[in-house]
Length: 287
Image (tube, rainbow, N blue to C red; front, side, top):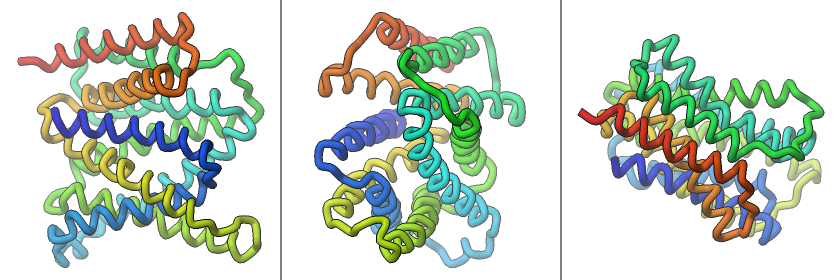
């Protein structure tokens, strides 16, 4: 239970940090790239002693880490582009609603247990996330981007669970998380270096600092989620649902209280729906 709570807290902290990037005029893309480098360094610094050269004999987890790393950086690129063309609101809905795609994959492909109680919780969770995220001002200019973000983000969530459940055997979650984020960092640095050389972007130390600050909660948000799948004793769909919905609820509350965002009737209804969903999902896994 504690790893799940800390994972939610780390993911919610990422929301706050992104908000502060605007205040300090930090280049989000450069910060994201340095965030991956930081996350890899933190993982190896804290858990590097868990590494064993024998892990190199297993190509399955390395392929999974490579895939996760590519998804990390590609989805970020697409989120940035979609935010410009479709607006932040539409992009946010696509990413947050991707929970529905990953849950469906778990139920259909893995036969995740589903009964009336957790089924009702999942439906309320999806409704709550939609109501909190949706904005009437949302515009759509390139719908294909939103579709790819929806499916890609859902695929990433599903991949992380699938890897933890079936691929990772001797390899610790901590090392897989570090390698996956490090892979994203390598791709990001290659792209960023090309942009520096071409003059499209300018190196600034504040972006490095921003990436360092972001990298700490980013690493633990993923690592602790993987740990939560094992430690809570709950079904995988419950862990994923509660994590995603809790992050949305916490981020919304932070937005209302710290950044004075408007809390309309729709968002309040969404928060209530999300809280009821969390309660139902929790009760469905009590002995």
